[in-house]
Amino acid sequence: MVTASTATSANTNREQEAWRDGDSDATDGFFNERAANRGVPNSKAIGDETEARAIARLVATGFSVSIPFGDNDKYDLLVDDGTQIHRVQCKTAWQNKSETIRFNTHSQTTKDGEYHERTYQGAIDAFFVYYPPTATFYWIDEQDATTQKMELRFDGAIDHPSINWAEAYEFHGTIPTE
Picture 1 (cartoon, rainbow, N blue to C red):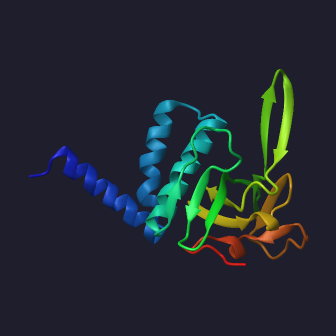
Picture 2 (picture 1 turned 135 degrees about the vertical axis):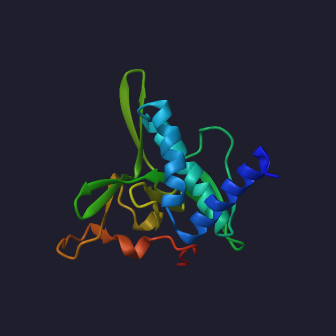
């Protein structure tokens, strides 16, 4: 007999297997359908979804993940690899050019009508970047990141010192060691 709880459990198990196997089609339909019912997401909603996917991916690959209480820390997650605890800032990437993706390496806020930007230098250990169209994550050490925006490239025709190869940062279930 299939009950609501066993059906939910089966769906959760399929989603977990999809995360482990890197099968974005198995999970994207679920999240996209829910997002479509809410209308156009704002930047907070997009960030929340990226964080949720990041936690799912990290836990599915065997890491212990903690979430700091409140929104006052510069990092979104604490990721324990068994040897070290990493302060991680989650970011969502977007396509910048046909051969690159980009993400912000600073926070943006408006307070009392004034625009403020803050970098993450010294406050985090890594960025965990999610690119929704391919459901791919990238682990980028804070020392490798630029201070405003960072681009990752897929095409060899781009030869620019500040645009790094996406492949070098792609997350395959292990955190790079220095």
